[in-house]
View 1 (tube, rainbow, N blue to C red):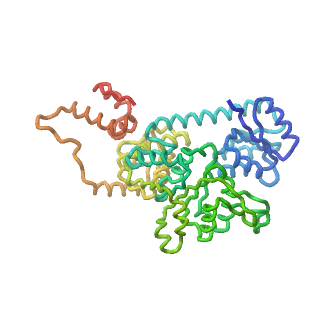
View 2 (view 1 turned 90 degrees about the vertical axis):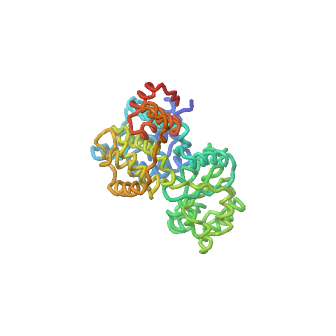
View 3 (view 1 turned 60 degrees about the horizontal axis):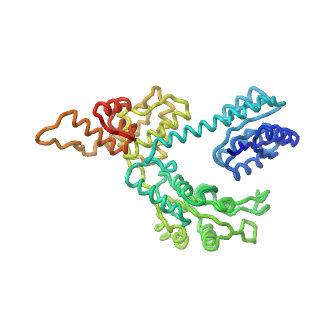
Length: 462
């Protein structure tokens, strides 16, 4: 097993030296820095840090500010604050923001060892729980993408086929459909999986900032450039760069990106020296790029470069059969996150959620369920837990749907028992053996489904 990696952050060199010696003796691998900015750079470059131990009072970026900024870099590891300026107010603020623990200097080194072990162990348990939840979806989950409908199964197959290559992929789809998840799945299926996927949203930054973020800059290249900074292209060397909302990139930047794709070289802002990197490009957009080309807003040659393979992610309204799977996944996640005793949703609510068009796609569904779990008063989410607009719109759409008969009754008749048994068999088959999903579709509890499986002697191996 690899050594657990701890990042020490303290502006006092002597403190760092003492802590490094003590923790190294405890079998930890130690990284150190004297500033919050330095800590962010280390976390950005090394994704396997198990814990951060930081001083609270530091010049520039203090411990709390460092913690807040770490969420923009990726998953925040357990974070422990240490300070010689312990006050009730600062302790409460630190714990309220999610910091794992709070230690007063001079440190009690026996206490420190216990706190470190507990924080790392709790993180490992949390990861195991998440992994077990993902495994529970079996064939319905693929690199955190969830779906059982034919279109999603085809997308999963496409990711496995295309991911292993190094070609550029253009991911198409409406906002909120999960285009970034698909990009991450492609990366995880590639030979570059052991390196980073670096993401940048072209719609979130001005042209000047986007250029600096993408290509990097030298010190003094523009006002505010107080130090040299690596761009996302350089950070993605040997890995994958995901350009989200590429349709919103300016024509000028598109031209520079096209030149990079042709030569795999670029110049940081303020530099005349070219740099070469090895990067796979994935891009996504919710725009029709052919229409953008007609209006002079997108370069045709750039489209040819990024659209070697295109994958279209369907909106949620075109895969409503996947709603129960998604609901089950998000309810479990938010129940764990918000420490709520919520086990699922009432069948009437599930029907309502499946009848709604979800204009905001999976992102809207996630927000709806997060709100519902937070407001829930009982173990099952009900109609009172979701926004009224979803109920009313769902009812309007449901009224328009033609009702279908489940069975054609044979002339010789059929018993209720046989009908019930066949209904359960067909539902289990449709749900690929997922009993939780089958129980939801049948409008019964999981326990009741197990009882019926036993009574009807159904072979329902999952």
